[in-house]
Length: 495
Image (cartoon, rainbow, N blue to C red; front, side):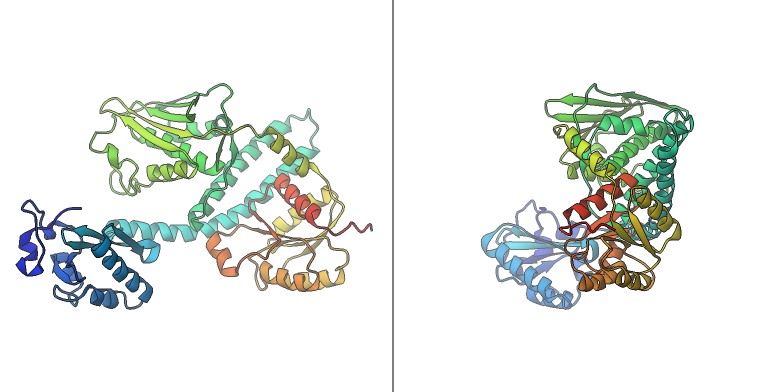
């Protein structure tokens, strides 16, 4: 922490100041000095301008209680932290405000303590953050509707593939459609993750397979001037990561490499097995990154692009995803020699047995009766057909209100309830509460394409229920229903 000069403190502060001190006013944020009794003994211009009612000579407690009058717990924590630093040393840091926008740091300084109040999102960054928050809300609504569309497209692809003979040439076209739908589903998941700020859904992942699946999508987005080379290791070990997030990592790194070569060049993607784990590297033949810029490469909002051409969030997002997956990322570059971003992820043992078990679970047919509650007609009709072709008997309801009398009329016959959460009128959670009061043992599986902030307002899921996010994959839905039914202790009632 920078030291503070005599000219800003004065002898009345009672603080011994080193001769080589840096002026307090040189700090680019409000800062003050506390004496041994937790009184404000000096302050810089930023502090005086921001807190004119809490000037030197007043207790730090006055600042805490005045500035944070609406947050008594925060005020008490700050005062306790200052006293602890003054008496015991160490450092106290407290973030607060919406999205933890502000930070207060209290550190020892000679026989006193230095208090620094930082706005972590100054004006330009704050505006960007507000724009991203607005985008997140818009994305949540768009992603919900898109999830329903993806569910319908993928569901009917599954139906057509089941009907088509093994020799039918249409199977290849349908497989391509379904592959594109898979990319759309992962994109939708990424939009929802961004909108709700939720963590990843890690699974055993073959990076080679993911890159091969992305290959056709990657080549058009990098442009004709850029050559894409992909070198994949033989028998690459699996890693544990969220597939959609890792796809986002690869796209961001390749787009970053493309942007570093405005006149064209080569992007090389390489996977390898090493003693330390599985590595993925992306190399470009661009102009490289200067030594002074390298330390900031992964900083949020940092970008070397022109205004309006980039948010500065691509590489910081990549770093966050990699570290959440238990890995690390580094960059190597020299001016004129391009740049290489290398990701290392811990390897895991193959999970072929688990995969086979999941496939077997998904392929199981049923004989039970399912009450399906879904307000979107196209999704409701599709799910009904999918379940019927797997042997289930389906009772439909377009709303929670209409589902209640159906459940009452068939209470002894319904083995499971599959319901959307957010619906006009009665929500799926309210419906579940009423059904549980009538028959507590009935398994309930919730589905939704809305983001977490919307679902949070509807309340927590009841204990013992299951949840599936849209877009729904037929095999995943079949496995979840089978799991919920098999977990239920209710014996089968033949009809």
